[in-house]
Length: 409
Image (cartoon, rainbow, N blue to C red; front, side, top):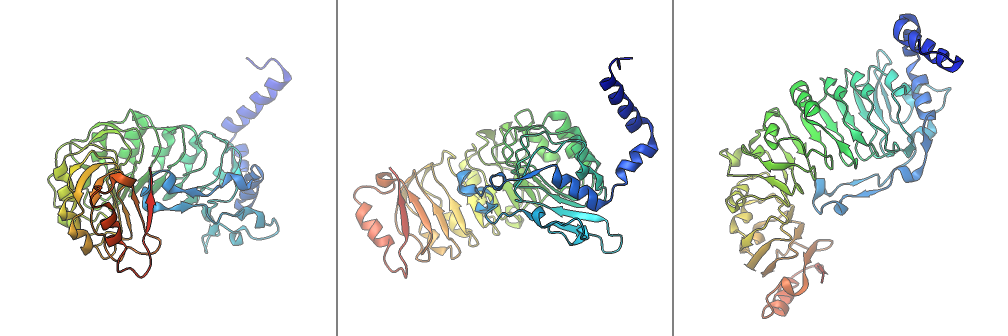
């Protein structure tokens, strides 16, 4: 009825064909996987600046194992040739029997441009893994069409210039084991979508949403996560309120990052068997919790990375930290620790990074902290004036290579 002009008549006809004619719709979906990939690639441009190197210490000194993303980026699709089998193309994986495209890894491939809902990317129904991280999709919305990848087990859209609300259809990906939407400034997840994600994605083991706006999500809903979760990274997600039953007790969790959620309160000490925990990475920086939790953390015998910056701790650093013998990185910056460093730090043979800036502590450091290791201090605040010169001299004795000190004023 509203198709008054020729333009609108054409649009209405196309809409009718797409939604009412199975043969027309099937002709679109019958485009070969190789053609779909080529058309998807042709819809985007190649721009080296679309995949800039991400030095994660810019986000947090311990952020996600201090990873570097897109350090070795290159345009994978530049080598794609129309007259070659797409199963041989860089970043493409095919099933050896069916020749279906089941994997696509175009991470850090210099891709720039929006991914619209009619993109031929969505004509690859057999995809099991999809990695588009480290590109720039021009602050486009995450299309609801992503929800049609029914066999997808791995989806990574991190650090890719997506913007807006997470579509409800993401919760349709019931086979997902790993979902990474982190480091997209401006993404928002609302309560109905979050509830469906928690309820529907029962196979999910890894969830990474760092930097996403989760301000409307109640922290206690995290306790509805599967007990089989191994990775939960919600760094700087604007979570707020009290987490009554601590997420630290998830039996299979190995990586837990709740850092930089300034208004999150971990509440009282959870009752769980700390010594049997599988935790290897823990970031609780800038979160309020009781000091007794710090003593319990010292029972995490598999812990390798611990970040507790800016947690308002006072007094001396507990000697129980020396129980974390597998620790490689310890960040205690921007607290109000004072006094002598515990000698138990000398019992940490694997420690390679120690961050103590903005505390008032002094004393010897482990002799194995050599070479590229950085101990960040805050000038005169690091050492009491009467110990400053003596202690620094003592720290640098008996080293095969000098310790590099970063002094900040």
